[in-house]
Image (cartoon, rainbow, N blue to C red; front, side, top):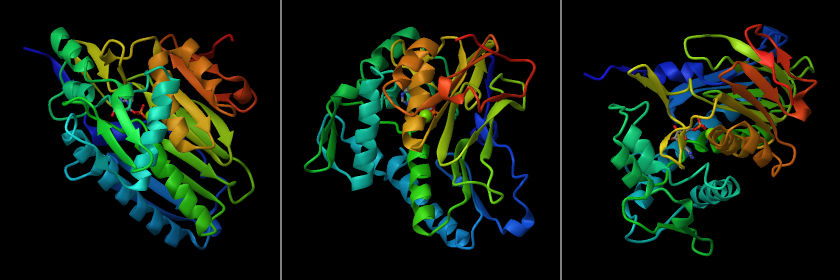
Length: 347
Ligand code: AMP
Ligand code: MG
Protein backbone atom coordinates (compact mmCIF):
# COMPACT_ATOMS: atom_id res chain seq x y z
CA UNK A 1 0.00 0.00 0.00
CA UNK A 2 1.19 3.49 -0.79
CA UNK A 3 2.41 5.52 2.09
CA UNK A 4 0.81 8.88 1.50
CA UNK A 5 1.06 11.74 3.92
CA UNK A 6 -1.30 14.50 2.96
CA UNK A 7 -0.70 18.04 4.02
CA UNK A 8 -3.90 20.01 3.90
CA UNK A 9 -4.17 23.48 2.48
CA UNK A 10 -5.23 25.27 5.63
CA UNK A 11 -2.13 23.97 7.34
CA UNK A 12 0.24 24.75 4.51
CA UNK A 13 -1.16 28.25 4.12
CA UNK A 14 0.56 29.05 7.41
CA UNK A 15 3.94 27.91 6.19
CA UNK A 16 4.17 30.03 3.07
CA UNK A 17 7.52 31.54 2.28
CA UNK A 18 7.60 35.11 3.48
CA UNK A 19 6.00 36.73 6.44
CA UNK A 20 5.71 40.10 8.04
CA UNK A 21 8.17 40.28 10.89
CA UNK A 22 7.87 43.51 12.75
CA UNK A 23 4.64 45.03 13.79
CA UNK A 24 6.99 46.25 16.51
CA UNK A 25 7.39 49.94 15.99
CA UNK A 26 3.70 50.15 15.10
CA UNK A 27 2.07 50.99 18.43
CA UNK A 28 -1.60 50.66 19.38
CA UNK A 29 -1.76 54.45 19.21
CA UNK A 30 -0.92 54.19 15.52
CA UNK A 31 -4.58 53.22 15.03
CA UNK A 32 -4.08 50.23 12.85
CA UNK A 33 -7.09 48.50 11.40
CA UNK A 34 -6.88 44.96 10.18
CA UNK A 35 -9.04 42.35 8.45
CA UNK A 36 -8.51 38.64 7.85
CA UNK A 37 -10.30 36.17 5.56
CA UNK A 38 -9.49 32.54 4.91
CA UNK A 39 -12.04 31.75 2.20
CA UNK A 40 -10.42 33.44 -0.78
CA UNK A 41 -7.75 32.29 -3.25
CA UNK A 42 -7.11 29.15 -1.17
CA UNK A 43 -5.19 31.02 1.49
CA UNK A 44 -5.34 33.24 4.56
CA UNK A 45 -5.37 36.95 3.72
CA UNK A 46 -4.65 39.68 6.27
CA UNK A 47 -4.77 43.33 5.33
CA UNK A 48 -3.58 45.90 7.84
CA UNK A 49 -3.76 49.66 7.36
CA UNK A 50 -2.22 52.34 9.54
CA UNK A 51 -4.61 55.08 8.52
CA UNK A 52 -8.05 56.35 9.43
CA UNK A 53 -9.38 55.39 5.99
CA UNK A 54 -8.14 51.86 6.47
CA UNK A 55 -11.46 50.23 7.20
CA UNK A 56 -13.03 51.32 3.93
CA UNK A 57 -9.91 50.31 1.97
CA UNK A 58 -9.88 46.87 3.60
CA UNK A 59 -13.59 46.28 2.91
CA UNK A 60 -13.26 47.36 -0.68
CA UNK A 61 -10.13 45.24 -1.15
CA UNK A 62 -11.81 42.11 0.14
CA UNK A 63 -14.73 42.80 -2.21
CA UNK A 64 -12.31 43.05 -5.09
CA UNK A 65 -10.37 39.93 -4.07
CA UNK A 66 -13.65 38.01 -3.82
CA UNK A 67 -14.44 39.17 -7.33
CA UNK A 68 -11.03 37.97 -8.57
CA UNK A 69 -11.58 34.67 -6.76
CA UNK A 70 -14.97 34.16 -8.47
CA UNK A 71 -13.66 34.90 -11.92
CA UNK A 72 -10.10 33.65 -11.98
CA UNK A 73 -9.89 30.49 -9.92
CA UNK A 74 -10.87 27.23 -11.60
CA UNK A 75 -14.03 26.87 -9.49
CA UNK A 76 -17.33 26.06 -11.14
CA UNK A 77 -18.88 28.98 -12.98
CA UNK A 78 -15.71 31.08 -13.18
CA UNK A 79 -14.52 32.64 -16.41
CA UNK A 80 -11.44 30.42 -16.30
CA UNK A 81 -13.62 27.31 -15.82
CA UNK A 82 -15.61 28.31 -18.89
CA UNK A 83 -12.45 28.90 -20.91
CA UNK A 84 -11.19 25.46 -19.89
CA UNK A 85 -14.53 23.76 -20.65
CA UNK A 86 -14.50 25.30 -24.12
CA UNK A 87 -10.97 24.07 -24.89
CA UNK A 88 -10.78 22.81 -28.45
CA UNK A 89 -14.29 24.11 -29.09
CA UNK A 90 -14.33 27.89 -29.14
CA UNK A 91 -13.20 31.24 -27.83
CA UNK A 92 -14.63 32.69 -24.64
CA UNK A 93 -15.20 36.41 -24.04
CA UNK A 94 -13.57 37.51 -20.79
CA UNK A 95 -13.80 40.48 -18.47
CA UNK A 96 -11.04 43.02 -19.04
CA UNK A 97 -9.13 42.12 -15.91
CA UNK A 98 -9.22 38.36 -16.48
CA UNK A 99 -8.01 39.02 -20.00
CA UNK A 100 -5.25 41.34 -18.70
CA UNK A 101 -4.07 38.71 -16.24
CA UNK A 102 -3.96 36.10 -19.00
CA UNK A 103 -1.88 38.47 -21.12
CA UNK A 104 0.53 38.97 -18.22
CA UNK A 105 0.69 35.22 -17.53
CA UNK A 106 1.28 34.59 -21.24
CA UNK A 107 4.13 37.10 -21.29
CA UNK A 108 5.94 35.48 -18.36
CA UNK A 109 5.30 32.06 -19.91
CA UNK A 110 7.17 33.32 -22.98
CA UNK A 111 9.95 35.19 -21.18
CA UNK A 112 10.67 32.17 -19.00
CA UNK A 113 10.73 29.84 -22.01
CA UNK A 114 7.74 27.95 -20.60
CA UNK A 115 9.16 27.33 -17.10
CA UNK A 116 6.11 29.28 -15.99
CA UNK A 117 3.30 27.91 -18.13
CA UNK A 118 -0.17 29.39 -17.80
CA UNK A 119 -1.63 26.19 -19.32
CA UNK A 120 -0.25 23.99 -16.52
CA UNK A 121 -3.84 23.06 -15.48
CA UNK A 122 -3.99 19.40 -16.64
CA UNK A 123 -0.73 18.62 -14.84
CA UNK A 124 -1.89 20.36 -11.66
CA UNK A 125 -5.06 18.25 -11.70
CA UNK A 126 -3.12 15.05 -12.39
CA UNK A 127 -0.85 15.42 -9.35
CA UNK A 128 -3.58 17.05 -7.25
CA UNK A 129 -1.07 18.32 -4.70
CA UNK A 130 -3.08 19.88 -1.87
CA UNK A 131 -6.28 18.33 -3.26
CA UNK A 132 -8.44 15.40 -2.25
CA UNK A 133 -6.42 12.64 -3.91
CA UNK A 134 -2.76 13.60 -4.35
CA UNK A 135 -0.87 10.99 -6.25
CA UNK A 136 2.38 10.23 -8.05
CA UNK A 137 1.05 9.50 -11.54
CA UNK A 138 2.38 6.80 -13.82
CA UNK A 139 4.99 7.92 -16.29
CA UNK A 140 2.73 7.35 -19.31
CA UNK A 141 0.00 9.51 -17.83
CA UNK A 142 2.48 12.28 -17.19
CA UNK A 143 3.65 12.07 -20.81
CA UNK A 144 0.06 12.17 -22.12
CA UNK A 145 -0.80 15.09 -19.89
CA UNK A 146 2.30 17.03 -20.89
CA UNK A 147 1.02 17.09 -24.48
CA UNK A 148 -1.77 19.35 -23.17
CA UNK A 149 0.59 21.87 -21.56
CA UNK A 150 1.71 24.52 -24.04
CA UNK A 151 1.22 28.22 -23.44
CA UNK A 152 1.68 28.96 -27.16
CA UNK A 153 -1.67 27.27 -27.80
CA UNK A 154 -3.53 29.74 -25.62
CA UNK A 155 -4.77 32.21 -28.22
CA UNK A 156 -5.54 35.70 -26.95
CA UNK A 157 -7.60 38.07 -29.09
CA UNK A 158 -6.87 41.60 -27.88
CA UNK A 159 -9.60 43.22 -29.97
CA UNK A 160 -12.38 41.09 -28.51
CA UNK A 161 -10.71 40.35 -25.17
CA UNK A 162 -11.41 36.69 -25.73
CA UNK A 163 -9.30 33.57 -25.27
CA UNK A 164 -9.18 30.15 -26.88
CA UNK A 165 -7.38 26.99 -25.81
CA UNK A 166 -6.77 25.31 -29.10
CA UNK A 167 -6.82 21.67 -27.97
CA UNK A 168 -9.53 19.84 -26.09
CA UNK A 169 -8.42 18.97 -22.58
CA UNK A 170 -6.09 21.94 -22.20
CA UNK A 171 -6.66 24.17 -19.20
CA UNK A 172 -5.41 27.39 -17.69
CA UNK A 173 -4.39 27.54 -14.03
CA UNK A 174 -3.66 30.95 -12.53
CA UNK A 175 -2.61 29.60 -9.11
CA UNK A 176 0.93 30.84 -9.66
CA UNK A 177 -0.04 34.44 -10.33
CA UNK A 178 -3.57 35.28 -9.10
CA UNK A 179 -2.58 36.18 -5.54
CA UNK A 180 -0.09 38.66 -6.94
CA UNK A 181 -2.77 40.24 -9.09
CA UNK A 182 -5.14 40.42 -6.12
CA UNK A 183 -2.39 42.06 -4.07
CA UNK A 184 -1.74 44.71 -6.72
CA UNK A 185 -5.45 45.43 -6.88
CA UNK A 186 -5.59 45.87 -3.09
CA UNK A 187 -2.63 48.25 -3.22
CA UNK A 188 -4.42 50.25 -5.91
CA UNK A 189 -7.54 50.47 -3.73
CA UNK A 190 -5.55 51.44 -0.63
CA UNK A 191 -3.89 54.27 -2.55
CA UNK A 192 -7.22 55.34 -4.02
CA UNK A 193 -8.60 55.61 -0.48
CA UNK A 194 -5.66 57.68 0.64
CA UNK A 195 -4.01 55.00 2.78
CA UNK A 196 -0.28 55.60 2.77
CA UNK A 197 0.93 53.01 5.28
CA UNK A 198 -0.21 49.40 5.10
CA UNK A 199 0.91 45.83 5.19
CA UNK A 200 -0.81 43.32 2.95
CA UNK A 201 -0.33 39.59 3.44
CA UNK A 202 -2.01 37.30 0.92
CA UNK A 203 -0.89 33.92 2.18
CA UNK A 204 2.74 34.91 2.23
CA UNK A 205 2.57 37.25 -0.75
CA UNK A 206 3.57 40.32 1.24
CA UNK A 207 3.36 43.96 0.20
CA UNK A 208 4.72 46.79 2.32
CA UNK A 209 2.94 50.00 1.31
CA UNK A 210 4.75 53.22 2.18
CA UNK A 211 6.53 53.03 5.50
CA UNK A 212 5.64 51.96 9.00
CA UNK A 213 3.96 54.65 11.10
CA UNK A 214 7.29 55.39 12.81
CA UNK A 215 8.83 56.14 9.41
CA UNK A 216 10.97 53.01 9.23
CA UNK A 217 10.87 50.36 6.49
CA UNK A 218 8.74 47.23 6.69
CA UNK A 219 10.75 44.25 7.84
CA UNK A 220 9.75 41.08 6.02
CA UNK A 221 10.97 37.65 7.04
CA UNK A 222 11.91 34.91 4.61
CA UNK A 223 10.67 31.64 5.99
CA UNK A 224 12.83 28.63 6.53
CA UNK A 225 11.66 26.42 3.62
CA UNK A 226 12.99 23.15 5.06
CA UNK A 227 10.03 20.88 5.69
CA UNK A 228 9.75 20.10 9.40
CA UNK A 229 11.58 23.24 10.45
CA UNK A 230 10.06 26.54 11.49
CA UNK A 231 10.99 30.18 11.69
CA UNK A 232 12.86 32.41 9.30
CA UNK A 233 16.22 32.28 7.61
CA UNK A 234 16.57 36.02 7.29
CA UNK A 235 14.83 39.28 6.64
CA UNK A 236 14.79 42.22 4.28
CA UNK A 237 13.48 45.75 4.62
CA UNK A 238 11.19 47.22 2.00
CA UNK A 239 8.92 50.10 1.11
CA UNK A 240 6.39 50.02 -1.73
CA UNK A 241 7.50 46.56 -2.71
CA UNK A 242 6.00 43.09 -3.03
CA UNK A 243 7.89 40.18 -1.47
CA UNK A 244 6.65 36.90 -2.92
CA UNK A 245 7.92 33.40 -2.23
CA UNK A 246 7.49 30.10 -4.03
CA UNK A 247 8.61 27.13 -2.01
CA UNK A 248 8.30 23.40 -1.57
CA UNK A 249 6.79 23.88 1.89
CA UNK A 250 3.70 25.74 0.66
CA UNK A 251 1.86 22.66 -0.52
CA UNK A 252 3.13 19.12 -0.73
CA UNK A 253 2.52 15.49 0.06
CA UNK A 254 4.98 12.77 0.92
CA UNK A 255 4.77 9.40 -0.79
CA UNK A 256 7.17 6.62 0.08
CA UNK A 257 9.43 9.16 1.72
CA UNK A 258 9.58 11.43 -1.33
CA UNK A 259 8.38 15.03 -1.06
CA UNK A 260 6.07 15.91 -3.94
CA UNK A 261 5.40 19.63 -3.97
CA UNK A 262 3.11 21.79 -6.04
CA UNK A 263 5.45 23.63 -8.42
CA UNK A 264 5.58 21.49 -11.52
CA UNK A 265 8.23 21.52 -14.19
CA UNK A 266 6.55 21.69 -17.61
CA UNK A 267 9.72 20.09 -19.00
CA UNK A 268 9.30 16.68 -17.40
CA UNK A 269 5.88 17.00 -15.78
CA UNK A 270 7.18 16.46 -12.24
CA UNK A 271 7.68 18.66 -9.19
CA UNK A 272 10.64 20.89 -10.05
CA UNK A 273 13.77 19.30 -8.67
CA UNK A 274 16.88 21.40 -9.13
CA UNK A 275 18.26 21.86 -5.65
CA UNK A 276 16.09 24.83 -4.68
CA UNK A 277 13.79 24.87 -1.67
CA UNK A 278 12.40 28.35 -2.21
CA UNK A 279 12.70 31.50 -4.27
CA UNK A 280 11.65 34.93 -3.02
CA UNK A 281 11.19 37.76 -5.48
CA UNK A 282 11.00 41.47 -4.66
CA UNK A 283 9.39 43.80 -7.16
CA UNK A 284 7.14 46.85 -7.13
CA UNK A 285 4.50 44.72 -8.86
CA UNK A 286 3.19 41.73 -6.92
CA UNK A 287 1.81 40.02 -10.01
CA UNK A 288 5.23 40.10 -11.67
CA UNK A 289 6.94 38.97 -8.46
CA UNK A 290 4.44 36.11 -8.16
CA UNK A 291 4.90 34.86 -11.71
CA UNK A 292 8.68 35.23 -11.49
CA UNK A 293 8.96 33.38 -8.19
CA UNK A 294 7.21 30.38 -9.72
CA UNK A 295 9.25 30.66 -12.94
CA UNK A 296 12.58 31.00 -11.11
CA UNK A 297 11.76 28.06 -8.88
CA UNK A 298 11.34 25.89 -11.96
CA UNK A 299 14.36 27.34 -13.76
CA UNK A 300 16.79 26.89 -10.87
CA UNK A 301 19.34 29.32 -9.54
CA UNK A 302 21.44 30.17 -12.59
CA UNK A 303 18.71 30.39 -15.21
CA UNK A 304 16.40 32.04 -12.68
CA UNK A 305 18.92 34.81 -12.05
CA UNK A 306 19.29 35.28 -15.79
CA UNK A 307 15.51 35.64 -16.11
CA UNK A 308 15.50 38.34 -13.42
CA UNK A 309 17.90 40.27 -15.63
CA UNK A 310 15.01 40.75 -18.07
CA UNK A 311 13.04 42.54 -15.33
CA UNK A 312 14.98 45.63 -14.19
CA UNK A 313 14.51 46.54 -10.54
CA UNK A 314 13.73 42.96 -9.55
CA UNK A 315 15.65 41.25 -6.76
CA UNK A 316 15.66 37.64 -5.60
CA UNK A 317 16.60 35.32 -2.75
CA UNK A 318 17.31 31.70 -3.69
CA UNK A 319 17.56 29.05 -0.96
CA UNK A 320 19.11 25.69 -1.81
CA UNK A 321 18.77 22.25 -0.28
CA UNK A 322 22.36 22.66 0.88
CA UNK A 323 21.18 25.51 3.10
CA UNK A 324 22.86 28.15 1.02
CA UNK A 325 21.18 31.49 0.42
CA UNK A 326 21.93 33.51 -2.65
CA UNK A 327 20.75 37.12 -2.66
CA UNK A 328 20.94 39.31 -5.75
CA UNK A 329 23.13 42.41 -5.74
CA UNK A 330 20.42 44.93 -4.83
CA UNK A 331 19.67 43.09 -1.57
CA UNK A 332 23.22 42.75 -0.32
CA UNK A 333 22.88 45.58 2.18
CA UNK A 334 19.33 44.90 3.22
CA UNK A 335 19.31 41.12 3.71
CA UNK A 336 19.94 40.06 7.28
CA UNK A 337 20.81 36.43 7.99
CA UNK A 338 18.91 35.31 11.08
CA UNK A 339 19.44 31.55 11.11
CA UNK A 340 22.84 30.05 11.83
CA UNK A 341 21.79 26.83 10.10
CA UNK A 342 22.09 28.65 6.76
CA UNK A 343 24.90 30.57 5.11
CA UNK A 344 25.20 33.03 2.28
CA UNK A 345 26.31 31.59 -1.04
CA UNK A 346 29.30 32.92 -2.91
CA UNK A 347 28.27 34.87 -6.01
P1 AMP B 1 3.39 29.77 -6.51
O1 AMP B 1 3.17 29.38 -5.10
O2 AMP B 1 3.08 31.19 -6.81
O3 AMP B 1 4.73 29.39 -7.00
O4 AMP B 1 2.34 29.00 -7.39
C1 AMP B 1 2.23 27.62 -7.40
C2 AMP B 1 0.94 27.27 -8.07
O5 AMP B 1 1.02 27.63 -9.45
C3 AMP B 1 0.63 25.79 -8.04
O6 AMP B 1 -0.11 25.45 -6.91
C4 AMP B 1 -0.13 25.61 -9.35
O7 AMP B 1 -1.48 26.02 -9.19
C5 AMP B 1 0.54 26.58 -10.27
N1 AMP B 1 1.73 26.05 -10.96
C6 AMP B 1 2.48 24.93 -10.66
N2 AMP B 1 3.52 24.80 -11.51
C7 AMP B 1 3.43 25.86 -12.38
C8 AMP B 1 4.20 26.27 -13.50
N3 AMP B 1 5.29 25.60 -13.92
N4 AMP B 1 3.80 27.38 -14.18
C9 AMP B 1 2.71 28.08 -13.78
N5 AMP B 1 1.95 27.75 -12.72
C10 AMP B 1 2.30 26.66 -12.03
MG1 MG C 1 3.88 32.51 -8.06
